[in-house]
Length: 264
Image (cartoon, rainbow, N blue to C red; front, side):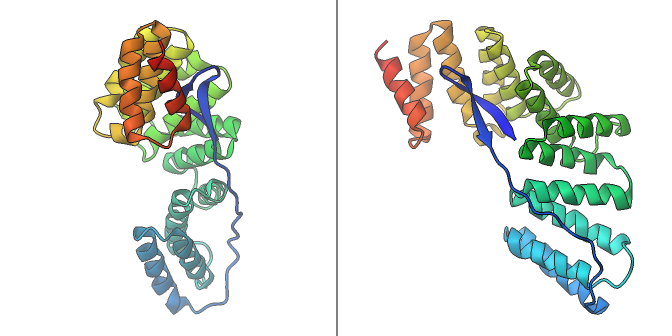
């Protein structure tokens, strides 16, 4: 998915592309059924340890060792496998696995939410939006797992399609539901930046920086600095860019921007 999470001088938005893909088959293997729980447990242990490749291999073995038709055990393993694939950034494989779960365990909003996020990461923005909308229809309580992530993915997809106003409406509805995190405010700020409403953009970036997970979105400081620059407050922009560069010394673009601000 091309994710706009940061303002870039000139083009204004920094785009990241993350793609990967492996398709999974649910063919029943000929292993011994008594081993399937051992394989599943090994997969869970590897997943918790962050060894996603080994986790996926173990979950495959668990499915192959299951002698029954796809049932509760296989569905359980598929959920773990999808999580491992997603954490491993193998988004196409995760999307495929969530698709299988939807086929064998019916349309559940949590599966659709995570397939939405996975599809967005592969660049399938239309598919991501379709999954988000369907999940929203099914999730009448608006509390299904993955909802917050799906909203951000769907909003980013809308932004990439040039529908920033629609994305902003989606973000505002999420905020009204009580979903508030650093990335949500970052995205809201980017929408306002795109409208050249720099003052409001700065406010949203500042709100994001107050959230407990602000450290996971370092672009908030960068984006706020650029918004101050575009507003014409070069002193504040330089101060924030210095703060950003101090914690992200390998960011050459930011370093160049800081040198420019020092010359103003």
